Image (cartoon, rainbow, N blue to C red; front, side):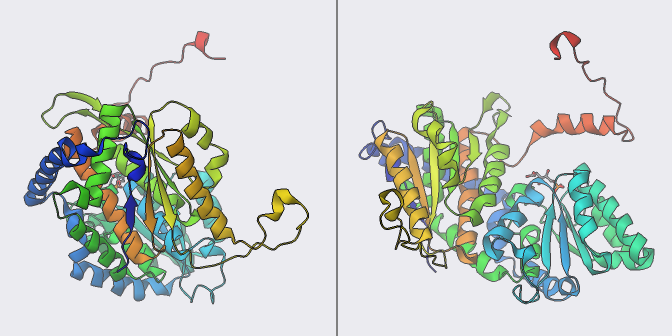
Length: 462
Ligand code: PA5
């Protein structure tokens, strides 16, 4: 397997003015990481970090493949309904592995695999526009909710159910649904059991944002021909690489430890992920959720006030060189930029030599588009380094299943290391509960009091 590589030289003092002193890598940071690694191993021992085991859950993968190859192929359109950790992984896999414009391609060029739509936000404009384009008889909904209680997903499920029933009748409607949910609890499981709807489990010990390599991400990808075994092989390889407690040999250790140090000791709490590949754009959003929801916490694990956590920022190269890069180069020194480059993009597009007499564009002729994109990535990393702005680069050999499996596992492990270093629980998200409860109250959920929202003060409304 070709491995992804993390080049973190541009974070270190030997290359970067004001960078991290290398002696720390074998000194205090090495010790700190060893303790974090031990804490994570202890947590693994308690069984709560189920994402580590996903690469080895053969039985679940067999069930995913069976449903994807059988049931999934009866339909022309698969619609995933889910939000947060229940959608971002599927979108990332779709864009990275199926490539841009999958749904616009002809059936032949999709090898007769179905189109794939992922609907997360309960925006009626989006959902109704999608339903207007689809044929109910040819459409399957994969409803993804670990809890089975998420308002956005369940509301859209109810609409989808009504839409299908109106077209094919109540009896046949259940044949258009596949639920991905908790293995034993929750309303979706209850409905699925009662109506004999096919279901896939999100293991009890795998939280939403750590679930991309569970049926949550695997089913939608496999329905469209992605090889789940190769994804999981990549992830397993990363688990192995991260088995060591020696900091400089553990890629997730380096990522978690150096980003934590950058935030807490160097005032660099904004962590940008900037892939130079349109196909990896959603991966940056997936990372954003993982890093933010896992590490932004009010309390330490012992329950003391923390109010801690880095701010992740999704960016895209080269597009954001014409937007955010000015800020990265000259704004506050509070950021670390993590670039992602792709060695082999699998296609080559030559730039024609058309205006040899016009020097301002003639230099482009004879090069390729992928050369330009990669030159921009390398140049941005160097420009930041020259200005004393910390950055690192993840190199992917290709955008394929194995590389994606490695990448997802790398960030997930880095996140739990960072959780140990920040001394917070990376697996919960208590901060979103209040807003949910207020929404339930506003929507009239039984047992929840209707809240009195603070009135707008007319003096401060223009
Ligand atoms: O990471 C998380 O736990 C969340 O983002 C959840 O994935 C999100 O809230 C959706 O939850 P559920 O899968 O229960 O519908």
